[in-house]
Image (tube, rainbow, N blue to C red):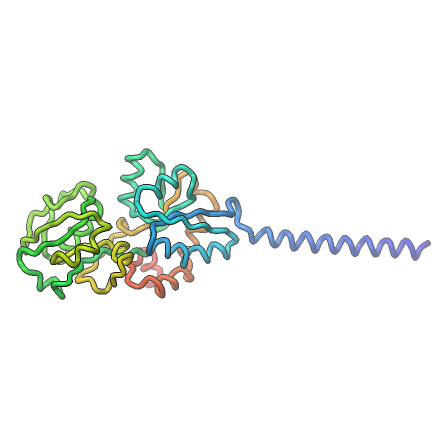
Length: 282
């Protein structure tokens, strides 16, 4: 009788240990799962920024336990509308000035998560090899939207070709705000996406980096690249109500990782790094 009792006790202890082991494994597995949302849908414009999500951000998030879906857009309107209505959890395509202006115009509540490396706008030419060679009266194609136009004019100002009114508003700037035009440049406003094509037909063209790359242009061929302020660099954006969600922190950590920067250095040469990344690397 005593033997049967001891055997029963031994079996009971054995099953208890196995159960405890099973619970421990289960707890360990669940701790590796992301908290909250497990499927993230991130929108980005086609080209370098959807590539950035796919190559530099998605793999890191997948290691954190997320399933990541990337939705590509061909315009600058739908990514924010899709974010606001819940079709996206985050997007990557816009700079600070555009985000704030778009949110105000459409009554949206958007917030940035982190600034990412961004392809700079450049001045390109098939006619001149340097800006010093630019002839008097040369025609230059420029973006016809105010925020990109402001960037183009600032490049020209930085290189001494023009001087802008110091009181200019970057949201409403135009070629009319040029107070001094050293080379008497002739400005030709063009829709930003069409600017790469104009390099063949005008003397100079100011081309945003994303459109230059989409047209297979080499950023290093530019006569001048913008000294881009962080306000003009692209950022990951979410709905403000989601700022404290765990997935937002995981997104930020992914971009802050050395793994992310390594992919940028290998796959996105010529992209200007944001201030936080440069300061970290000092």
